[in-house]
Image (cartoon, rainbow, N blue to C red; front, side, top):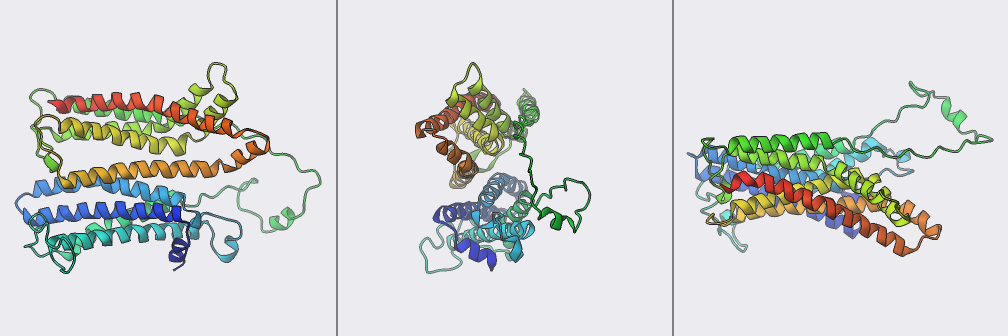
Length: 404
């Protein structure tokens, strides 16, 4: 009940982000149910049904990623002073975030079930009843346990991922060991001459670049091996994708993972480039901001670039005489792309909220607003200048074996 009250009393922007999670969960749930309908209508094609289910992993992962990103920026479950006094410590807030995520994704799964049943023609009295009866195996009885299991996949995974991402991380005592119960009484006595805190050390560069490069190299090697003459035969894939071995697609998945892992390091590199060669105040402010926010911005930006490279590979597959993408393929692409862009926008909002105190301090010191806007434009231009060619090169190399 508390999670529902917090969700109902949030601001409109927060509610809009939750509605995005509901929409993504509904799209993913509908794709999973369509896979079940294909299996019911084609009992002899067990391999095709399993392959379609495997293709649903991409929108499922994208939906879970967006749900976690929205939960991280939810102000209703953020630790605040005074909440611990009423029993809402970090662990309870983490549980509330997981419960809110489970509620929003379960609502999307319910909408997917209702839409699936109406398109099958099971309930009547609404528009489009039975519009896709043949595609969704309306002549076969729907196995309720299987449908509920598929629909519970996204809420369960999203809530667990949210709990893991927002789990409380205990800070060790400065004296080591367990805290002394009498230490609170001593801490209440103010010191006569408090020592000032030392300045924070610069944040080190993210260490995901070697793993990203290794995943990229492994993906290219898998694709080159799978697309060699006399290699594995092509496998019919959902949505009209034909003519390529599954190992080629697995190699592309590795390249996409490598690009996502290298995102924070590339963002940190953008900040370093802005500060190089005798920087001024604006370039220094923009570069330090990118280096400070390399983790929160770099990860979703790398995911967006990975999705863009995937769309480039799909455009390569559908070029020429290949059939046009089907409605389910289009829906999956919309879910994956929309979740990636929404997660990046959510991360940008989170970074802006975290930088609010710094911006306020700069304004109090007399920094003009044009300096802050110019620094923001420089950050965006540096990210575009670095990530665009990297994404194009990775997408071109990953799609090269698929042109055959």
